Structure formats: C-alpha cells, structure tokens
Length: 477
Image (cartoon, rainbow, N blue to C red; front, side):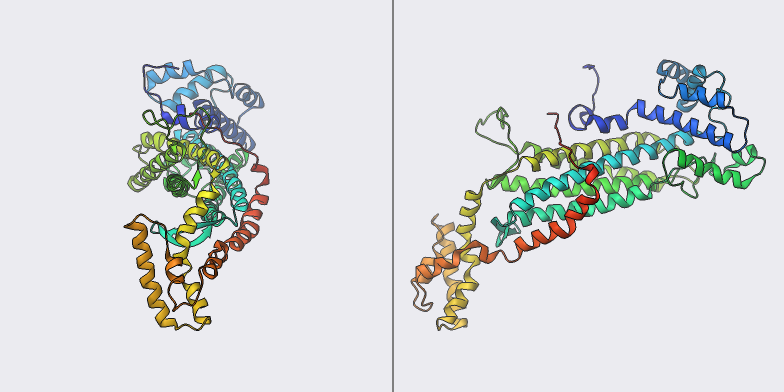
C-alpha cells in the first residue's frame, strides 16, 4: 500500500471487497470488452461482414487487459475509450478493424455504468435482506419484553423491545420495495450513436430501420438485460443516476434513525451494540464503552444523504443531447455512494447480530415511571370502589405533580402509589395499587402487532429472497 498519497477511507476502512470489485478498473474494462464482443456478434447476426475468427479473437482476450498499452496511448491521444480500443486491437490484430464499429464512447461508458450500478444494487439488496433477517430475529426474541416508550424522548406509554425493532424493520421494508422497483426498471443505453438517433447504424445497415431496432434488443439480451431505454441522447438520462442515489439515500436515512436509537439506548444502559473483549472505548476514560459502530453508521449515512445532491445537479444541468460536465462528478458520487452504503449495511448487520439487551435495567426504568402511566387504570379501579371520577382525576393530577417533584427536586423515588394509598378518596390499599403494576397490562397490542408483522410481512419477504440469506458481515476496523 502506498503511504505517500491519499487513500479513500471508503476503500481502506468501510466498503467490502465485493463492492470494491464492482467499481474496480478490472470490472470496468472487462465489461467494455464484453460490450464490444456483444456489438460484434450482433452486427454479424444482422448481416455485417464480421467473421467468427474475429469474434473468437476478441473473446480470447476479453479479460487480460493490457493496461500499460492503454495508458501509454491515452497520454498521446487524451481519450480513454479510443486508447482501450487501440490496446484491444494490438491483442486482436484480425479484429481490430471492427472493434467499436458504429459506436460512440458512451456505448461502452454508459452501458458499463448501468451494468455496474445494477450489479451493485443487487449486492445492496442482498445485504439489506440479511439485515432485515437479523432484525426480524431480534424482534421475535424480544416481542414481549416490556420497555418504556418515548415521545419527544419523554417517558410515554410502554411498548416492547421487539415492537420497537419493527419500526426499524418497517423503514427497511420500504427501502427494499424501492430497491426492487429500481432494479426491475434498469435498462441499458444500447447503441444510440452520437445524438441518440442511430444514424451511424442506419448507414451501416443501408437504411434498414428494423435492423437498427434489433441492434439494441440483441445487445441488451447478450448483456442480461430485458431491453434498452426507448429513447435517449448520446447518453442515458442522468435522472437514472439520481434515482439510484435516491434509493441509497433512503437506506442511509433508515440506518441513521436506527443508529440514533441505539446510541440513545446505550446511553440509558438498556441496549448496547457489540463491544469486543480488547476494544478500547476511550483513550482517556478507560471505563467507557462508546457506541463506535452506530456512530460510524450515522457518519456514513450523513455522507450518502449529502451525496444525493450530486446526481440531482448533474441531471438538471445537462444540455440537450449531452455535455461532458457529468463525467468527473459521476466518477466520484456514484461509486462512493455505493461504497458508503455497503459499509453502512455491513455495520448495521454487525450491530444487530451482537446487540446486548439488559432486561433488569429496562425493567427498573419502566417501573420508575409506570405509576404515572397507570393513573388511568388506578382511577377506573377507584371509581369501581365508589369514587367520583372528576374528583379523582383532579386528585391524581395533584399527586402526580407532587411525586414528580419528589423525583426531580428531592432526588427521591417515585412515590405516587404511596401518595394515592394514603388518600382515602381512592379507597385503595398499597397492595391493591401494586397489583396494577404489571407492565404487560400497559403495552397494548405491541406483542401481537410484532407477531403479525413478522408473520404477514417479513416472513413472506424473507421466503421470497431465501437464496440471498446466510450472509455474515465483517467490519474492517
């Protein structure tokens, strides 16, 4: 590894080898050569003088990219595509005359971008499905573990740990819906020519419009796509890149929300992310167990959400049939968006797989607040015992304020039950009141909602994507 020049943290620290390969030079230029072979085969099939011998020669060298020749040529001609046409031709002297026949640079450049993004989206889907699977297991395990819920980060009516996890799952399910739709809508550019009119192919095929139409479809089929975008300029619409980054940013939003919740829960000591035996939480405070993984998720997610503006700007400022002010931006924003989301999902999977739940802490905090949550039930019991509902409501309000003062001003325990038991208007003993303190009485349908959601929504989703399951995430550092 070179230590005297900038190295991208996305490659060095965060993204997997699989995602890095998808955006590697090897993947890019091998795909260019596959596209040139597909073009040559199509032109032969439609009657142009391309020989089997030429095609076999192209196939024989499709993976051994002679980078040194291409680099030397690009220094001379300042054109990356023509440099690689030249380099391929030096390896395939019999075929060099038909390489790239009728095509423009965007034939290999744009089609490769679509192919690469589609493969990257499929890897994102695989990881997203596995995160959903891990999270579903966590929700099932803790579906009936009562916990204090929060609105505005203030104590609110209890829920369960598993039900809270379904909120994270629901976000991811929406992301998967968007991802599936996007993958299903991806199409190749095809070979549209300089301004998208296929004029060069109309000339090659002596004015045969039907053969021009078949060029695109056959190339798409050879590259594993259902078809090409029906119209374009020289390039595919840059809104495609914007749509792709939008879905990635959606995943980042969901992951950020999850990471925030975990960080808050770790502060409350109720749930912790994994913490390895030899891991150091702080260079100064040896006792600390900082939520490093969740913080990293949030940090990378911020980057992806901000990155989304890049393809939006590119798509909105393209002139007519094409300009080249997209190129430098695309080379940065699209791969880095994918590499960052790849790192996010690996972290998300790793965190969920190792979450540590502390039921005793959860119960202690819940029970300290539960008397406030139980006041409506207590009031109903007191009415059944002969009390006046309006009078009791006002008394409970006053006693709740007094108990709150004891907690916040005096630093004491929540003594609301004792205060109510001491008031004859309620006609309830402390023992009677403590019977109302079963947390499961206040979680509503949290357990049942969790079971129904996992059964009716998540289980079919995982069954449909069963071939993607079984992935275990590893984080680099």
